[in-house]
Image (cartoon, rainbow, N blue to C red; front, side, top):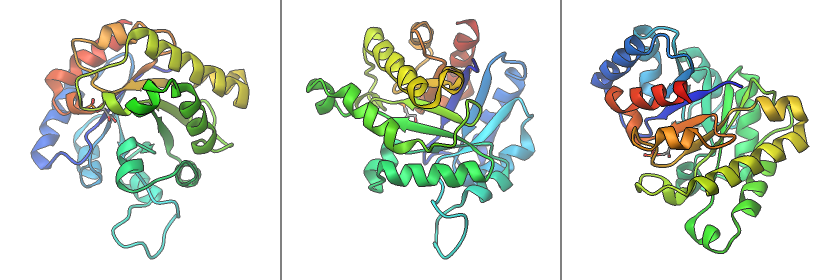
Amino acid sequence: MRKLAAGNWKMNGLTPALDELEALSKSHANAGVGVLVCPPATLIAPAKARISDAIALGGQDCHAEASGAHTGDISAQMLKDAGADYVILGHSERREDHGETDEDVRVKAKTALAAGLTVIICVGETLEERDAANTLDIIGGQLAGSIPDNVTGHTLVVAYEPIWAIGTGKIPSLNEIGEVHDFIRSRLERRFGAGVGRSTPLLYGGSVKPGNAAEIFGVSNVDGALVGGASLSAADFGPIIDALAES
Ligand code: 13P
């Protein structure tokens, strides 16, 4: 099982932020777990030039088509060309801000896989859906609709990010996280077989901080985290990586 500590900088980060990345690449050159940072697309190429291979880079979205007349969009091949090995797809902020559907995410994932990227497919429920006890139905539907058929255990990562936990400082109980992660694992095994199902890293995301990382990483079937705010500084992201390495 690959453990992965992934940072999603979202729409944050100008050139000086590369200092944080460089600090992290020095302090965690031998982290013992996978470390990934997804900065804004403008920083991928300069980041690649400044950091060692110890830290992988990823995009935060890509277009469904390989190239063409789509002003302002970025293609999977462009991300790969700039130095990315991963791309986050179907983040709840993309689903909400840009109306992305499961089918949109699936098509983008196919294009990203064809460009040689590993896809991080995000799923997660709203608070209303959790309160209505619909969480597993929602997650099951998102998994079925968003993940293409041709993934392998090396080209797929799934991130469970309860929407109500993102940027709020709230997290589900450890039992609730475990229930969803066990469910995701069983759905992947059922659809793709035990090999792919068992080797796909499952990340938890939503208000992961240095203070709660260790207990989250102790939950069954949690193989890492997708970290927003706390990934912006090496002083916060470093201890989260360390907690994963010690789990
Ligand atoms: P926060 O860690 O800031 O809650 O963000 C989580 C997230 O959305 C990562 O993709």
